[in-house]
Length: 193
Image 1 (cartoon, rainbow, N blue to C red):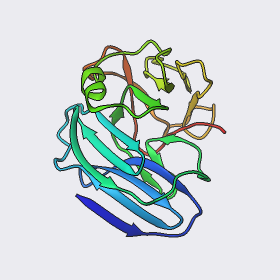
Image 2: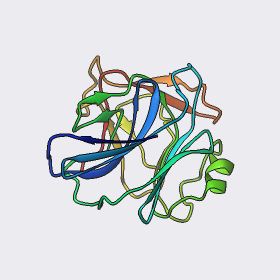
Image 3: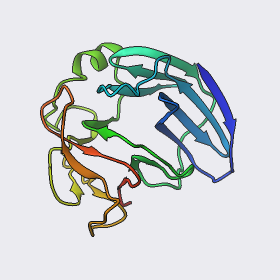
Image 4: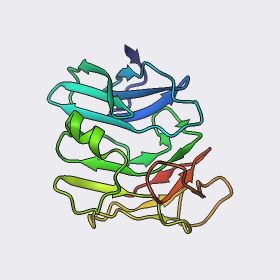
């Protein structure tokens, strides 16, 4: 399913993955316009789900649990976002993700459907070709989330290095990948510029 929305012109143009009504949205803002690919099936079933969004030229694809779930041809241009990277929070819309997450990866090259399906449950080393950033959420304590690529894209749980009651909290992972995870509710993980 594809949706197009209008919202305030905040000068941002960036891709994001959100959840609304139990469905995944892979969306982009461009100068006050927003377009979404919405997953066919709901993912609010208390099970772990793997989600991937790819951009190849003007074709955007959403994968859920290793399967292509939707795509759109997008005429939006990317670049120039005014927002820092966040997990669990969409800055422009003030939307928070109330759930757990594990194993977040950003690639410089578009992953193929086979690469997504074959590697969705595989823990990476951090030095894979074209891997831009990788967080496995295995810290288990503290306020830092380390980028395992060595590129320095480390995150901070919550608004700053000081622990607060509404910061994400470390929990034992039930994801089909060995390691830890974070439970998010009202706060987020911020990545300084």
